Image 1 (cartoon, helix red, strand yellow):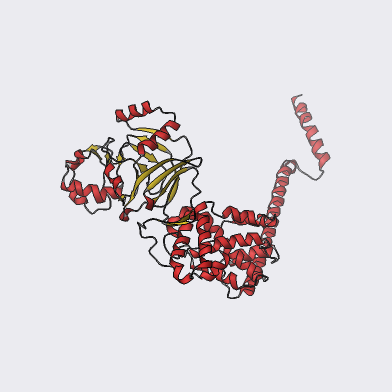
Image 2 (image 1 turned 90 degrees about the vertical axis):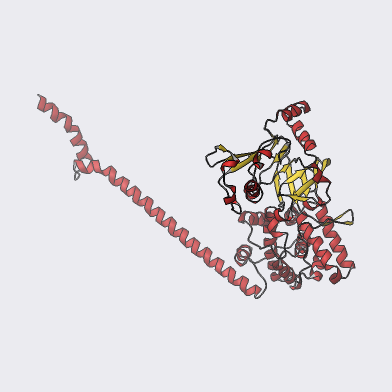
Length: 489
């Protein structure tokens, strides 16, 4: 009976298999799913190979098209001074070499701004480009290509100069052009396609009204004066105009024009505070930079930077370790342990570039930072701060610090910022009296602009300041063609 039951259980399976495939074995049936899966994988691999082949062919065609376009650019331009052959080829090939600069207002505005850049002397390459544009017939495609080549350089300049001003705007022929980002080029070409080229050019132009006034004065002067005799002053005005373009008009934020030794704090276009400042000495110049206030420290300790530590503090300690106690200095070894100044042979570290110690000056009225420190992100560890040496603010020349900006009215500035953070003046006085170091986040948006402008036009008059760092000493370079500049400026 048991044997018959076993035969009965297998019988339907045998019948089913035999009904599906008379030539298949049981193992064939169970392996059929694996074969289907393998076939599916093979089809997928084949599809991938086809897609890769199509992509490779497309890439080959695009490369061939690009090479043909570049060859046409070379043929069209000959010995003309072109900077961005590949980019120009891509742009014009996509347009079947139709002109871009159809909007005369956009063209005029761009050349006005570009002529101002050329007059500043920061790029001989820009001067060559402008000269080439000026002598090429406007009806020819070569003129259009030269304009676009110059505009690519100008786009790169306008986007990068705020962060690279210190490198580009303080010596002759210091700007080196590079291709702007592809996204920016696409934004411009879309604007051209939508008949918004002028709007795009206007966005790239500087908004600072002193910049615009200064360029207009140069333009007027070129029309009325002997260009050769006035070239030096016009060059310096143009150079300083480029320095002005990196800052907005004076609406909101803290503005420190380094050679003026002045800080101006604006809120909604109103001057909230004007204060004398002390800036970096010749050997330790205050850098041109943009940042934002992040926090205010009441009763700040001073973590002495390595440069000051090695050049100033170590020699004093080598002569007299007792200086540490008189100056309220705390010394820490590499493990963070506080040690005595007398336990170190400081003489061995004189003239060293670094020392294996960290030194901090305790908070207090005699601290180098005074009672307030105004922090802002900076790669150079630059910030604004108070100082106990109040008499130095009476000096006419105040390039005396190690790079940071000392603020005469730091108490008033702190009061404004603390009030915005919800502090009462009574709380401020209590914290000051406690000598406790307290950090307070800045509540409002407070950009900080440290800039360097010595010559500019304001209300139609030439304004000048001492060139304390010697950035303006050079005369106008001979590669500036003032006739070309006048034509477009």
